[in-house]
Length: 371
Ligand code: NAD
Ligand code: IPM
Ligand code: MN
Image (cartoon, rainbow, N blue to C red):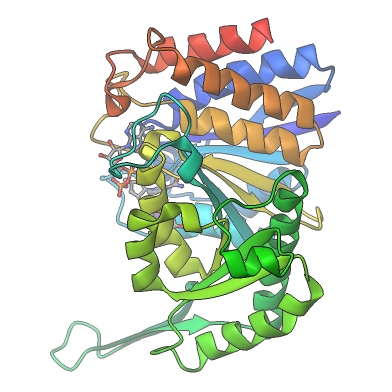
């Protein structure tokens, strides 16, 4: 038995969640997972109607769920930050979802704008720290609205918070290396018997306190994972390398802010915002984890049927993995792979097709039912 809290949210959120949810329901029944669903009316409509963003009582109800599925939040009628901080970030923080796991995998049949790269060359995962850094909201204004105004927003980095994130990334790289030796490993690393690679992405040349802590923790933790090679890239160089040599990344571990930025770039490498999935994980399972597409509410295409539901659908694959239903999780991924690889399969306009959200959702649903 597992209860899934569903927050469809704003814009394209409800459209893509509708498709993902239908598939999750089918899989729940087919694999006897005993799933039940509880929908939460949260987002811009509720805020505009009542002024409520996330009442404490609702947060408590969410805490009783085994996992949460979120569409997206954000609305042009609501000032920036109200819903993002009050709802999304509050859930990430209150439920200690300190890992934001964002796979970047180019699937066959999807085009990447990166010239000359195919699906074998873009297969990395970003482990984004999700509870610290600039996102904590430490700071404030003085003399706001005057010419002497000062605005401060501080990056918080704790040794414990950094280390738990690093260890998660190393353990994940070990898991990935169980099935295969990472093909992008250098010859030297191979000869040293390494099987996987963890890349720290930070800015140690400028953030000489915060990222010095990250770098020291990284170097202290690495020897506990002897099968893994490590390297380090400054975040600016990482952006360059993700484009020119994406095949050199296996697991990237990085800070909250940098992880936010490089995973939009990662989304583009794998075919766009329409296919990028994520999980906000509380690895200890003290609190529910939350699964969501990387994309936002996409107000520019909301209501047009153009939203690609694949990102949301792949997010339920991650949700199922987290619930321990690995077989159901992998059937989501293979169904998506089948639909994308089929030259006659429906695709939404972001992937160059003319299909609608519904049609793509239905095609994946049918592929799941055949598996
Ligand atoms: P966005 O991700 O909503 O949109 C960026 C671009 O990607 C747009 O052109 C959009 O049409 C396209 N896109 C997004 N999802 C798509 C999909 N499923 N299929 C096809 N195309 C898609 O980012 P934005 O425009 O910067 O933000 C819009 C709002 O969403 C803001 O309020 C922002 O704060 C919020 N936001 C929320 C989340 C979240 O809920 N997790 C994430 C990012 C942004
Ligand atoms: C994301 C989004 C959020 C973030 C915003 C909406 C708060 O951009 O999930 O990537 O910055 O984490
Ligand atoms: Mn983002």
